[in-house]
Image (cartoon, rainbow, N blue to C red; front, side):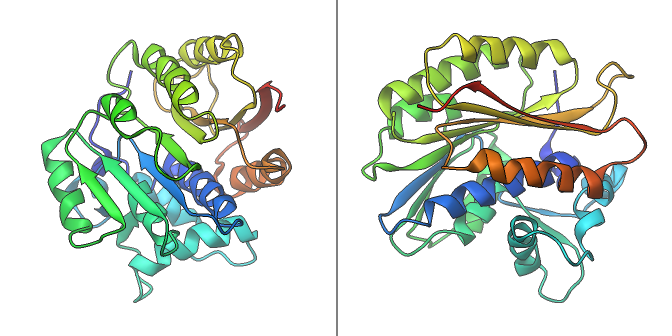
Length: 281
């Protein structure tokens, strides 16, 4: 499994994939007037300095946000995501990269709310500083899985839970499957987005089989692979499971995933996947 601080990997291709989809999911919630709530269970630091020593060690951001930063003629979904990154870099120099909390906050309307939980003490301190005095954002020093019981269901009937743990534990996918079941039980009307890495292919496929058998309706799987899944150890790709996705998300992703692959892909082994694990009702 993975074992890393996100500061070393901020803005890489997996972040681009995750944050493009996150921005689109929140954008779909904005299409209706009623307020919504977003819960980011493993929120991280909020923003990342791409000029810092950790980010510059492997410069992973150059093969992620770096490939899109100066692009024009992108789809509206990629443009919306890039606007969130540009907002942190008004001088046009790519230095700051927004984590999922910053992207989510930028898309809230006055009546919407964001709940963030982070257990790592350093990242939690950064997160609190990032949103100090912001009444629409609640920051908690807590375990992300425990937060699901504490904060669900929310007062707003509409919303999204983002599950994006560090994947440091061998049973992480088992914990995620249980978390998805818990969220559905407590808040069946909410949407769930689960980001996951593809290193060894087997764990994510087992996770998907578990979700197929869960009895939960409307589970969509989207994946972006940049390197052969049977290649040397490393991050070959990533995916996102969306439970109770917005209407016609599959049609949007059917166009968006190949576009992401086109801009981020290096070599000849790239691939995308879009599949309903369980059809929508």
